[in-house]
Amino acid sequence: MDAASAVALYLAGLSQKGETQARLGLGRGEFRALLEELSLADCELTPVDVDPSLRVTFLDTRTCKYEDPTFDGAIEAMAAARYAPPAWRIPARVILEGSTEPDMQAPASIILHVGRCGSTLLCNLLAKSGGWTALREPEFLNKLILARTAAMREDEKVRIDALTERLFACLARGDRRRRRAVKLSSWTAAPAADRLARSGVNRFVGLLRDPSAAVASFLEQPPYWAGDSGSAGKENNVRLFARAWVSAAETMLRLPPAQCLLLRYEEMVDNPFGVIRRVRLHFGDTRPLGSEAKIMDALASYSKGRSGERFEPSGQHRRMVLEPRLQRIVAEITAPVWRAVRRRLD
Image 1: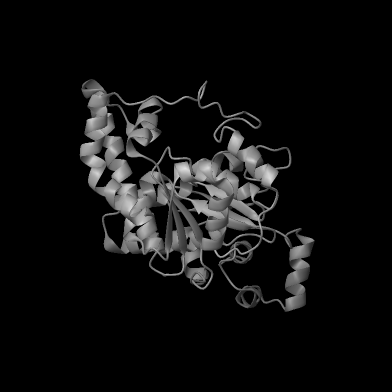
Image 2: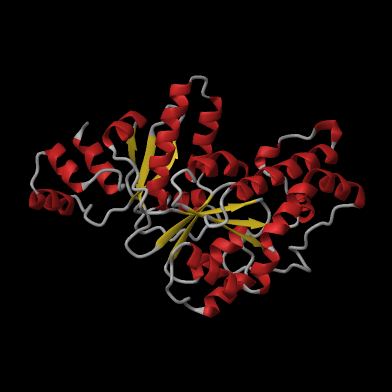
């Protein structure tokens, strides 16, 4: 392993200081002096991308505020800045051979959702409550899930699983100022959450919304993974979105109640302070809430809009309502799981 990779693994929290010093042949004081000389003493390397060969890109995110509605948008803005941090690119082989097993005694805080259910708002409320950063749907995690799905050999799948777990531990470990919560994409919830739950210590919050409302929002603004519905039109997409809702909801129901806190969108909107207190407590944070004014400002803002844009549910942000024929299709697909969700919420 070259010296740059050894230092990068340490800065990303993927190797211990002692083993890094040994790899470099440096004493404790010499290693500290090296980091200070290279202006890396306060560096916080975070994985931000992975290419088809599984080479991982890391960036120093100590200045990133994660204010964009997505993780990748925040990273792109930071990378486009005048003084952008340099990228570190490390092959999967080096990461897996040179890094230690993730510290499973440090539970990760993970947000699951069914899509179009207010999960971005939940992230914003958590971030504004003080002491938290929310990383919203890192695309590189989706790439790893897709790579595993496409893998033909079992050893390839095991390798991708190990890489995913190490990178997720790095992503979720938090920084010197704030804890981190990671929101997964709704369509990767099932394969990702099942593996991340194996340790028994990670904590999940699952956000749900009435399936008809979620499907209507998907239908009005289809996600990139929906594809072209073709001549079948709305009905095919309604079935697709309803099944996606079921998959995400079933994933949450499979997790033990002690490990996964379920919430409804309406509850979050009606009682934001109570819900955020419950979320923070579930994630192991007993500190008092920060500014209530900031929380209310986040509630009044359009979560996926530009900074300062007000949320107008009766105006420009009004959502469509499914016609009765399409509502019946959604109910046929989602009713059993929706009943199970409501029983657990009760």
